[in-house]
Length: 361
Image (cartoon, rainbow, N blue to C red):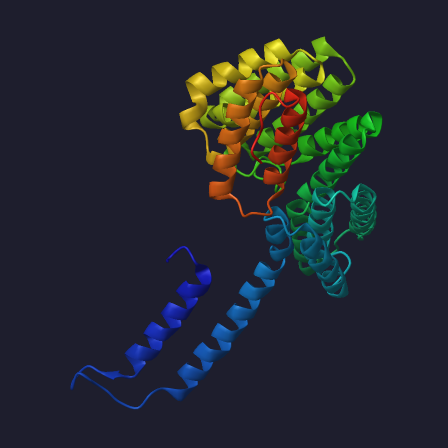
């Protein structure tokens, strides 16, 4: 409860009002301080509006992740227009554009997503030009203002890397690997400019505060690894994932257990090295499965099932995919995109089995 600053302010004001209204000699409450009550109502109302504003920006993504991608996209468009009316250079507008790009990608509207990324890039470039065009301060007042603006720009500097990362994923999904690779290289360049306390929002959700820059770097490198696997560059793919394995191990072993094996195995699957992918996934399942989150467990099982399907291990594939679907149904809403993906793999498996056995979707 004390972690909520809004609630803490209300409690402090309420406590002050209660003390001022209490007669300690007679141990009774005398006349209520009307002004204090008015202040509590006013401050409380303002804090509620702030909380609602903060929550409104997260609603579209929450809906999209819960399978309501079309509704999430519609609300994100409304939110983009609203935040733009508050100021095109505001952090909320850039974040709304980036969130909208992520939602459009989930919805399969890759061109729209790329368009939103381009708008965000343009706005960030214009904001950077304006910041650089500020005249040098001549007095103490100007120096304080100049420093404040620099601090604001520094605190927002993660946004370009986030936009570029969204752009890279869109190009990857479209199969445009060269533009995706270029966007990843730009992202890495931006990450190197960030201070250690800054990070890419939504890139690595479980990052530790003192290691978020490195985590963002890992996420970008592994996307490059996936791109290289699509381009059939085995040695480069191996080198990249070995590098990220070592980087992950330096930061957080639990996070390494969570999804490095799944990502690397997926890259090997892109290279049609399904036996190697199966070995990695099987080892992860036997040694690390119980340490993973339900999301990580489901991801591993889906990849394991798809790998077994490719190797014609149909019974094992059916078992893995069915177990993954069971986990997903327990933790995800019915329309979540992960369930649709797993069901599509089960449908492929059913077709491959050619009537030898049925797969219950």
